[in-house]
Length: 153
Ligand SMILES: Cc1nc2c(=O)[nH]c(=O)nc-2n(C[C@H](O)[C@H](O)[C@H](O)CO)c1C
Image (tube, rainbow, N blue to C red; front, side):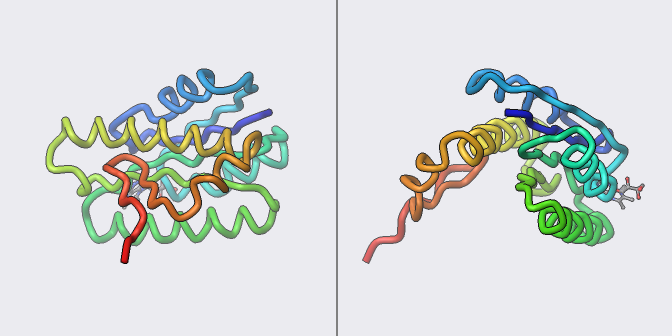
């Protein structure tokens, strides 16, 4: 299994290093990593990881800032990532943590690490253990903050 990791220098946490650390705990993986300035640079970086470096799946890691223009950037980047998935028929797990999701720096650092680690596990499951995800269908999983859990009547 070859996993691509694309992350950014804009992010305030080294999400790429965390993803690599978590992936290595769960599978024997070859890792191809690239770091770009910001989230809008992620789609082409991911496309290159898939097409030129033959990744089976890619994690796109980024931190949109808290301003309105950052949120527009995040939407644009997200649209690019979806387009890239459709062009390449390959999953890109978008791991974005918005800076204003957390109440302070400490919580932000925790959330960025937690979401990155949980999505690294999802990436391994998507490629190697898809039945594990099927077993979790409808269970209200969340990455980072607490799971929502299943809705009950
Ligand atoms: C406004 C802005 N906001 C963010 C952001 O919230 N998070 C991020 O990672 N990058 C941001 N950028 C930078 C762009 O994504 C990109 O790196 C530059 O436009 C250069 O292509 C920009 C320009």
